[in-house]
Amino acid sequence: MITGHLGIAAAARSFSREPMGSILFVALLLAAIVPDAVDALYWVIDICSPYGLYSHTTYAVALEAAIIGGLAFLATRSRGVTLTFVLVVLLHSPADYFTGRKLFVPGGEMLGLRMYERPIVDWMLEVPLVIAGWWLLRRSGRSPRWAASVWAIVALVLLQATLDAFVIGRGRSLKPNGCPVVTSPVGA
Image 1 (tube, rainbow, N blue to C red):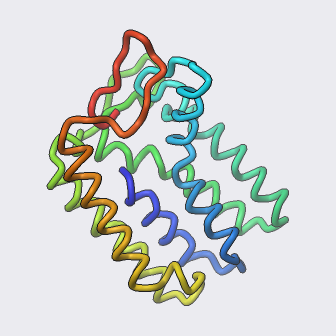
Image 2 (image 1 turned 90 degrees about the vertical axis):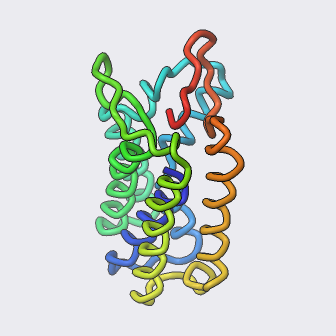
């Protein structure tokens, strides 16, 4: 899941009645991709996390959600904003189930529908998801103007199309992997 995570964050924001300016909204978008950012961090510091073991398993995502929720609460003192951030992080793994194949429990089976292996199907899942999130956000009137603009959704749809056509469609993984033996399968 790529732009779909941002669509989920936008939808979550549309339902939250708490005030949230541009900076907090960008932080919410970033919270939606925390497990992927953790994967990238592990790669940078050369820690092997095969198939999302330390970033995408249920336990890892719960810990990431707790940390992000704690930071959101410290920054805003708002339970509603905190809950929105926690929810967005927790929804990362269920969304990844459709596009990739990962461990959801350490030592468990690899799970996922592997839509990254079928870029057109991936595009058909992610684009409606990001459009729905954008539409809900725009309709709610609770977003920064730039996020509800037509240009924002055009950019996200083009980004997804580009990634599906030139990266995912060519069998490349979007995520680096610090594991010397275990390579990242497409959509891992």
